[in-house]
Amino acid sequence: MSHSERSNDIKLVEDNLQLIISSSSYHLAHEDLALLNSDEMRGVRMLLEISKPEQILEKENILSTVIVFGGANIVDKLSAKQKLDEANRLLQKHPKSNHLHRRVNRLNKLYSMSNYYDSAREFSRIVSSENQAKKCHSHVIVTGGGPGIMEAANRGAFDAGCKSIGLNISIPREQQPNSFITPGLCFKFNYFALRKIHFVMRSVAAVFFPGGFGTFDELFELLTLRQTEMKNNIPIILFGREYWSKAINFQLLAESGLIADDDLELFKYADTASEAWEIIKRDAPN
Image (cartoon, rainbow, N blue to C red; front, side):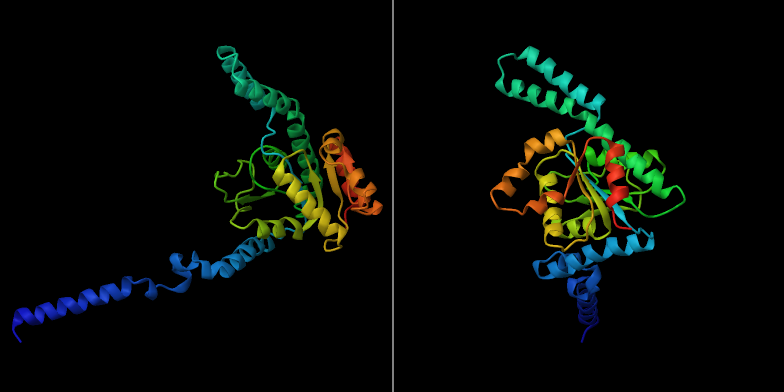
């Protein structure tokens, strides 16, 4: 064999070794992102999504949580006013636009609901300061980690210098975490179902501010868990009687025989932060 032939053989072997090392089959399984993201590994991803937050919350000694749900579009009064003013300016330029008339009407209503942002912030400040003043890790506020009412609740804990948790979700319209969650206690989920598990598992109370589909989804999930006794007897508070009594006709469900009369006792109404906190102090499990 000539020298050039021997050199070619050596190069072929070396190149083959590099192909072996760079092949995905040679990657450690937990470092193979293509494998982890495959359909076949969905169960593994779900296990990781259960285990990671649980491990961190255990390490942080989070004993119990208070859930705060509510609409992402309900923002603070100043922000709501700025959006409304901008829409009104556009409407003045295009007074015949049905779309802009609709937008102004909607923003007017959202502006009138901005008091719920203030109430969520106040509620979370009260709960956090009363329970974490001595580095107690109970009644820690947990939200979906996004904007609106979620931001307000995390912000209230932030105001009090206390911890709060954000359970963010990866959705097509990317949702960024708000700026008031405790660093290290903000988690990103891919699966709504597993996110719900982490909402509920440590909760001793849940407060629902006005919101849309997501808020309704979480409300009926928790009511069902309470109705079927799959979750212990925690207070479920609907904040804003006027909104909730119009949004859901619970009485109709009972009168139609679709739920028991006793099921109407699964939730309470509150209209102030202090009223909601008094219900929790009275009814939440120790």
